[in-house]
Amino acid sequence: MPAMRHRLVAVDGLNVFVREAGDPGKPTLVLLPGYPSSTAAYVRLMDRLADDWHVVAIDYPGFGPSDPLPADPTFDKLAEVTGKAIDALGIGDYALYMFDFGAPVGFRIALEHDRRVKGIVSQNGNAYAEGLGPAAAALTDWWQNKEAGQAAIDGFVTLAGTRLQWGAGVRDAEHVDPDRAVADQAVIDLPGRAEYMKSLLWDYRNNPPLYPSWQAWLRERRPALLAIWGKNDPFFIPAGAEAYARDVPDAEVILVDTGHFALEEEVDEIAARTGDLLRKAFA
Image 1 (cartoon, helix red, strand yellow):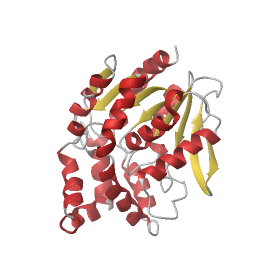
Image 2 (cartoon, helix red, strand yellow):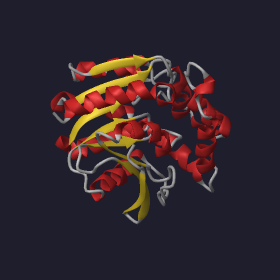
Image 3 (cartoon, helix red, strand yellow):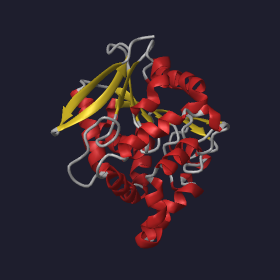
Image 4 (cartoon, one colour):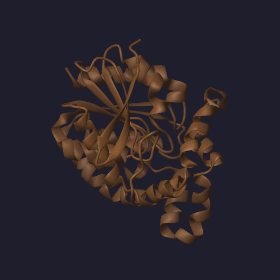
């Protein structure tokens, strides 16, 4: 398999960490990670795709080895910096792989880059109100009453909370490498980083009001689209995957028997389906 390459890209005075594999002369898939993780979660998927595609995974400011933003983070700012990183890498047209936080970051970028985005893979990346599952209630309750909901959110940024994310909905907990949660928590435990993450979780409340604009873009542009979700995810439920077909009627919707971090148990299936989507997007 092609060797993985790693580099830092300077954007707005920040060092943004990038993982890259495959031939840059081939069509590009940009992978956007979720909370509380980093691009390390994509290594096995990238290994499976890199023979045929150029694959690039970008850590948001404050995630993985990327520098944090100097002020309170927002999804607007994460998207701005990530979009500039895509430009700095010299990427023209590309497809987007969105997981979890990758959807609100990715759709902001898609509206900005517009026709450059030829395809979308949504892997438990929500853009519809009906996709919010019961495990998201802790967040929505907090947004309604910050003081009453604070204890639950404080727990979210602990090792137990990070382990909960990784294990949510999996068929077998033994399929998830426990080192993944420990590595993510090591970033959250850096000075000031837990509050940084809680600021982003608070800002997430500004994403659902933007869903109609993302859906309008999908209806207008009709990108090649694959919604492949772990159907047992308690955060983003299957209705969110199925809703994509309303706006992109030829979207492929696949529900696999796993949870939120679906790549842990279904990386081969997701890699194969992603390859099919890329062939369609760049035909």
